[in-house]
Amino acid sequence: MMPMDKKIQRAFEDVRADEALKDGTAAFLHEKLYARTRRTALRRAVPAVCCALLLLFALTGYGVYSMPVAAISVEAGETVELKVNAFDRVVSYTCLSSGGEDAVDALNLTHQTYGDAVAALVEDSGEEAAVSVAADSAEKSAAITAEIETRCAGVACQAADAETLEAAAEAGLGVRKYEAYLAWKALDPTVTPDDVRGLSMREIRSRIAALSPQDDAESTGGASASPAPDAAGTQSGAGQQNGAGSHSGAGSHSGAGQGEQHRRGRNEA
Image (cartoon, rainbow, N blue to C red; front, side, top):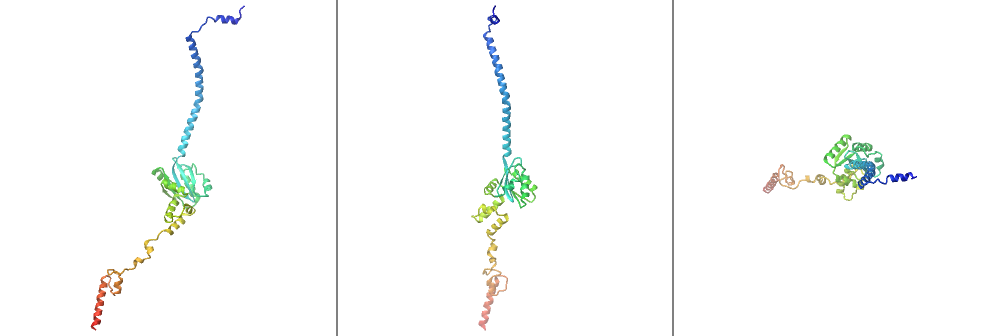
């Protein structure tokens, strides 16, 4: 008796698949196999692409946030330079006063609005304050200046150019003290930023005043009031010597005539 597997094999011996059927079957299997692989890869790639886009947006947003568009120099006890972004937030600051870093750090100025930051520095110092503002546009500078003057009553706030602000920071001085330093240096070329840094504005002004030339009237001591010999002068010394009592230069001529008559009288006598 023939085994069952032989019977099955003999039953399918006459079954033949043509080439078209083979190709179709192969294409079907290939499509099913690789399409599933592509869908799986795509499903895995979508979250990665989304994460990359979110990261890109986050980095771009942070770059815009951290980009300064204005700088504010605050001279109030400690001298601090604030960098402000387009959203009016402090993105960084530099303490230019040696030894004052800890006190400034304690105020947590980063991410505060520039109005809050300036007010905190002014209130913490309890001293006369001056603020200088440099921005990427005149409108922005004017807006910041007006806001600070409104927020901090009595604080002298002025606009400054970026070059002056940068030069002052390199010298380790606030803008107001840097301008005073330049005025002092014009009178005494030996002075350095280190000589100025520890002085108050009152002391600096006193040094400048001591070196400044006096007015012409003061330097001459009133010598210009002394009359020069002049026959035409109303206060002419020649007129006085000749005894003329008139208020004009003619008095000197009259005095000469009187002297001539006097001599004639003596000769006749």
